[in-house]
Length: 112
Image 1 (cartoon, rainbow, N blue to C red):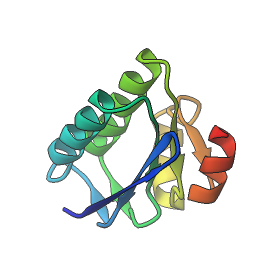
Image 2: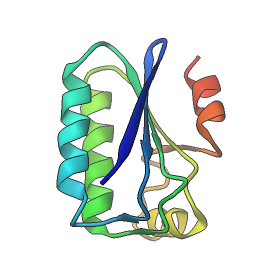
Image 3: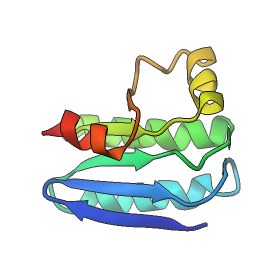
């Protein structure tokens, strides 16, 4: 599992560099999210543009991130959700739980 992490002012950007957000990668992603949550007071952007498949475990990792960052007064933005992932969020009635934007640039604009 490859994840690029960039720091931009008050925001961390996680660029997921794999195609499937499922039970094989969800535990590692959750661990990285928890570590980022304990670091500096930063908002979080998760770039999902390379994700072509997600399951309930993958959605669970995104929900964990949302809860952790919301509870600590910070914001989480999902950038680049593919059509398939967006449909899964819609079916799961989670589209309104997340801030969804087209790309990381729009996410940074939203956060500033």
